[in-house]
Image (cartoon, rainbow, N blue to C red; front, side, top):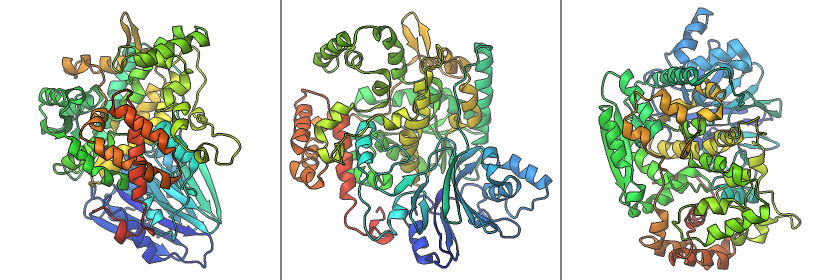
Length: 633
């Protein structure tokens, strides 16, 4: 695990500045505190910061092939590297180390650009082929590891984190106004956009081929939902169990202490349960709790830990933790409004004091239909037959109900079509109330399409498998752009590596063949989420874990913004601050703040997104950003 950075100049006579390359790497010292390495040869430069996990003594990067014609730096882990190494040795390749990194260069020699098909892991790879003068930049199938790039007429710069590109620029790039708009709709900025014009994220499952002044983006992996109706529950349960157990086994390979995040939910409990069976000593587990009972899962985490004989560690988050928010926005590089980033930051900090690697249950909800919104989508089917005018009237009734009234969110959703209701954090009409006209219609002619990025991943309903399009969107957009961004940035802020067994591509491809009716099952009382997953691990999960409803990993920000953090919200969102940005309507934002504080409406999501954006913007000054002046302290 590490951070990588580099540059390729298209003019061979324009050499890469080794001091600039070092500055790019220094900006990511937190990702790799143990070691550094660089390769700088005329117009190409590759650099990295390393967190030692495997082959501590000889696994330094960059790594070359036998004749020095192929060189690589990479961030991540290749879980099947031992199997690949054995095969490459049998084919005559000679290895100098025991590291997974060296497998990449030899596999590229053997397979060319198809080498990515053989990797089982998480990775961002930069590989330079001296013979063909070709740079390959690749990102893993789900985007567990980040990779940003800036393409100009003169060359391409790339880095794990955007700050490593920004530190080489003389002036801050302009905001990408479409990214600003999408941020407030989704609460994250979807790839390939970033907050800055001209800097992009490489899409998961893609790679860039950079050669002779030409850059091509190529998709090397995807998956589709093609339900296999020839097999029943037993077949899928057996397959899921075998594949997930093997995924956990592969992710236990480490030369440093290893543990797990444990919330007490189904996914993390399954991972810890399998670890406890595969390891010869108690699993080190870690969890976060809250003082507010409605948000606290610590008791469930402790019960699961006791059932598995784990050595459990817990910490309680208080409102004073908001003092850390400035550190979070620095690590995220761009506005990111998932409030669970804060407890994830604290969880990672606590975990790193005990271990260097932690397994997590991320991906289980997206694969197996774990979110309550899937239940709401299915229940909406019979209501969607009602005339649109009647559904709008019912939505207005829901809007007038008290804040915690049962059915309020469901009634409000009836006025929306399924897809935008499902994928957006805020609806376009809500965002248009507080964003300035310059953002909504930057060219002065037509407003932006709020569904452009969501619709790019929209699948047609496949027969009666109604949930497939929504599961696909979550796996392709919400998971990599929200969940995995949060986990990577918050864990790497502390030099902690996280591994996600549910994202083993063999398991994903198998589960994609499973009919959605086995994921979210209709019952007499509604719909049961994760039906097949719970069935597959019924003997492993404690009854209390198996029977409880999903509990989100969220902060009690609605309460905090009305009490402990009320003054902070008023200060950050004061009209004087917002006016200077030129992106917002200050009067509209003040109305949102007042309505929330006075408990007339609950605007916690909108206010959190605004608070994060303003704090992030404060971190952009002064410029230029340098490794000396901008490194987090």
